[in-house]
Amino acid sequence: MSNRILVLYGSYRMGIRLANFVVDRLRGRGEEVELIDAKAIGLPMLDRMYKEYPKGAAPEALEKLAGQIRGADGFVFVTGEYNWGIQPGLKNLTDHFLEEWFWRPAAIVSYSAGRLSGARAATAWHGTLSEMGMVVVSSTIGVGPIAQTLSADAEPIGEGGKALERSFPRFADDLLWWIEAAKAQRARKAPPY
Image 1 (cartoon, rainbow, N blue to C red):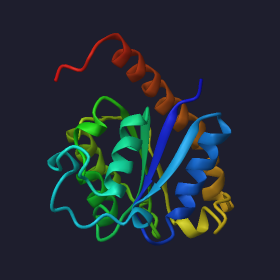
Image 2 (image 1 turned 90 degrees about the horizontal axis):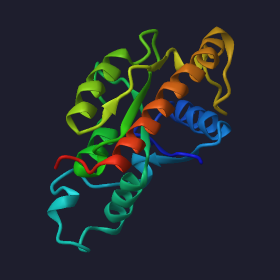
Image 3 (image 1 turned 60 degrees about the horizontal axis):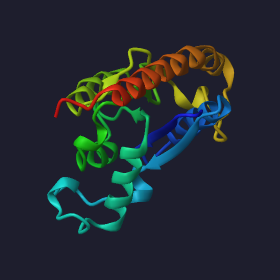
């Protein structure tokens, strides 16, 4: 049985290459994967969380996304690094929700135009996702410079592309192990709150 994985992406630039690579490779492993693009969803700047709306009164895009998050077995956050930090589009998307994320694993894939591969953004996301109730998988992927690692069609190129291809199986294995563990635990007993 396949797992339902959401790949969340929040940049409006070259990172879509990496998001599409992750989606393609996870689907190639038989997983049910959906790309959630913060720009395409177009949520407003956070002024009210999903849980603050009366039942059935949330905007349609928010209601749909809440259902997608609740229905997922795990998440992959594809994050770029801008000015040493987290992308505002993806952060805004995640902050609309809280309980919907609980008790599922999240993995982080980062990138940058430079050689540091988005490492600072990945580090910042680790604490943020943990605080939001997700188990953050220790395996990560960092890609940089992205334009020298993935083509516009999300195909690996050059030495960076070869390294990405080599690292992805371990990354995916770790994420899927945690997804299975979390599913088993949720089926065994209800969350403590």
